[in-house]
Image (cartoon, rainbow, N blue to C red; front, side):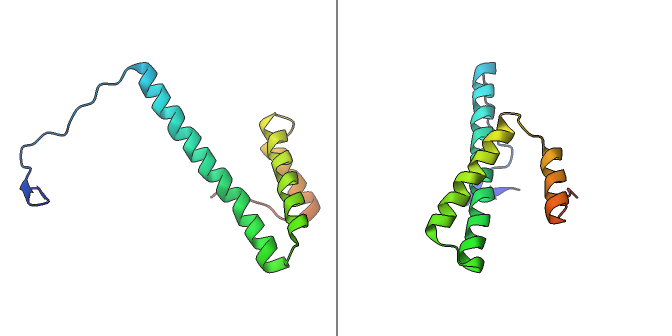
Length: 101
């Protein structure tokens, strides 16, 4: 017997929703845009937090860093560089290799 807030929901079916193809695509795109926006905020905010808290960067340096980071994201988005290009560059110049598990 399943109860929710004191109600007996035994035998109650879950609601069925009918979506048009356009609505389904719109909902998928909205979810995608929200996920990308959240990921970008996280990927930009963590490095900024680190350089401010651990390396005591001044506001002017942080602003320039953020502009440069955004420029690099735009280059990637425009297809001017690939993920493999970035991985190779970071490894060759910094000795750091990021890998997926």
